[in-house]
Image (cartoon, rainbow, N blue to C red):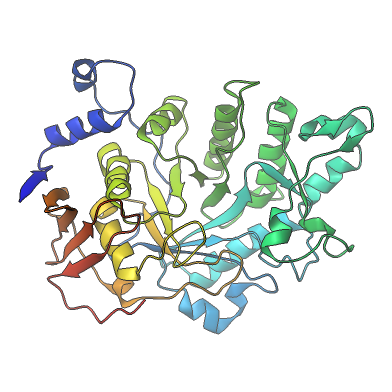
Length: 411
């Protein structure tokens, strides 16, 4: 049995060097401290119970107005309100105000239990269920260049997205459903960037100039815009978003590639953020990358493990929790999402594993080679021992938690 254990700050620094794609020699990096974030999240870190997060949206009502639904969500340490919230009921209109109202409703209903609440925005698209976007379309002669695919000759926008329509299985063919369509922001246009950040996002997080009672925004697709024709523009969007949210004592969660190199670039640009990683599974590489990002470098992270999805293998709840504990069990302001549907309130099963207080990790994780398998392990002050065993080329590895009494888990 061969074992490699990270047991000191010096070894953690060497890990940081090994996993970071940096343009200088190892000796130069060794002499430097890892980069530091420009700010910390302005809300309490979750604990002491397991930091699990919820990410759903009810198309026909507010969850906080349903006592049964609200009761089922009180254990979550973070709530991410998804884009379908009230959209069917509102005929796909008024989306920015609906999102803000949903977040405030959750914060008020959950009370001072420490749950962080985030609204949703898809960072590249300009949905027609945002009234601020509809207003621009009324004068495309003036504002057409705010969108990709605007044709000056015809005065029309030739490119759109049906992502929201298709995910809800509807056609944008009636006055009640046409608002599910979206255009794409032209983020090379500085005026478009300012409008997107200050007006669209601003109306989500504030009303009448006053801060809404919420903790921040999840910016999905935050890294999808390609700024090859306007280098540096995407970082400008991230910075302006961060600055807007800082103004209201809030925090951004960006869906990005999740590399340490990218994180260092964001911090160097003055951008504080939480990393959101979609379709995360407890594989050998994913556990190591999560540990490097969250605990070695210190980037707060949310990882979403679908129960079952076309883009990800099935991952059992025990596997997901064990993998998360190994990769981020000592990381502040970080969460595991375990559930499938962001287009409804279903698909988010609560597990007794989420109720347990695992305590502080007794040290970094170990990674061992046993026969042809990679075995990750980490021990906690509660006596819990999390292990994940990865056969060769496994995309989602089986996990276990021993040393404590936990109920039989069937998911």
